[in-house]
Length: 301
Image (cartoon, rainbow, N blue to C red; front, side, top):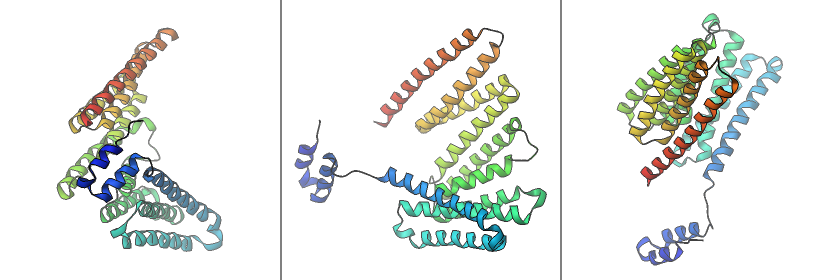
């Protein structure tokens, strides 16, 4: 196995003993990063504790009463926020997910209060707007992209969800949400820099592409063409920003839309002809994805 240990040993006078020793230990596989595992474990812990809070609400509603439960959940959320705030100068991966747990508890508490007390009655979606504002304030106060993600989800729900709205009618709210996220990103970038830009971009791309896909339920051809147009914009942005995920997003959605259009045109054909279209498109898509990945790997190097 190729080892760079001799070269690192020769560079010890330049790198210093501490840095050279750390690099040599990594080269020998004596040390390795547990960061991904810690993030996954912390995320699972936060979501499991939030689920436990929901079970607590369900099992103790009659015994404690809705008001007491709402106060207890609010106090637990406040404790999470306070813990993270006082440790912000020495924050770790776990602290980020304690903050996420606090945000999830806030979401559960606001939804519980609305379900029990019906503060908004028919205008029930307003509690989603309140959550969007609360999570956005916390995201900016703590500089947390995860909490910002919760704000964006609540914001999208406030715009898009309605009891009487069918699934195939979500395309317009989705496109509006994506456009507003692009505006939000522009304002945020001018005000704070690029810290949250990627989060806005990823959500805007997915929501817009999903909007095009939902329109395909109503009209396959027009919805497919809309999805292809959005995918072209996302792909162009990916190449411009040298970000491979955006190119992959756009490409995958474009392949699905193109297949749907082709199958719509082949409705009167045999199953064998339709299957041939799908298989050929998949082969072409896999080859193109391999080429795209090789291109971005070359760019990164």
